[in-house]
Length: 337
Image (cartoon, rainbow, N blue to C red; front, top):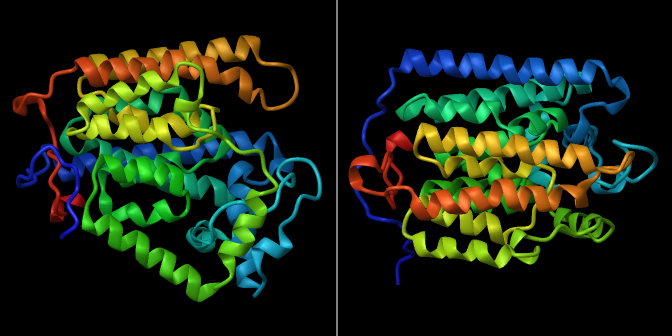
């Protein structure tokens, strides 16, 4: 039987409604914002290298020197030297273009390019989704130099979906939002290249993961099973995204939840989710323990003020064809990017 995807309906992808020059201007502004946020943050913390992007950056440099990053990157000191290289090898391959740069520059360029692609993708059918850049998850992604902006862009442009191989958990959620054969092909190709570069990398990756604390999915948290109500909207991309996000392991530190900003379809819902995310951040900031990451303290705030509003939006926003926005075509088109 041929593989089919759980799409709402197959229909032709409409042309973008925002002029290309406007989308390029948005991309440039978003890229500059991301670059400046990371550059400013890292300039005040030179001992942090490129924050969370330090691991892919160091792994890319190890590959350029002919070394196995899973062997040479080990826990040797304070952050960002606290753990071995815990990403799949494709993360290091994506970091190769910026590997020769100073770590702070590499992190700023990576996050700037990710933000530019996200801005371009978000502006395809209007500018209301650009509210995402004012959300707490985007700010925390910039603070930590994370992958979630790039994966959110990939959810909107399946031609970028090869990046899912660098962070498979969020990549699966992004794929659930718009499953296409182009996304499958790109991810498979990236994994194939990684095996050519280092055939034994899954062994090293598993060994690194075994040394780390495991992050569970939201449905394993108190009250998280309620998120499965999103299955009532499984035939629309927002419902699939919410359920997938509820089921994949993730870090409860705000940035991994950025993909949920693809759930709102109206400006009002987007603003509400963004405002609620800052309520969550303020609550976490108030109660977090001094010193350490404060990860456990963030969980209830994210569940109550990010996941719960996203579920309500999925259940109650209109899905009439007139308000549907870009359709869920099962087959990729040129407009998929």
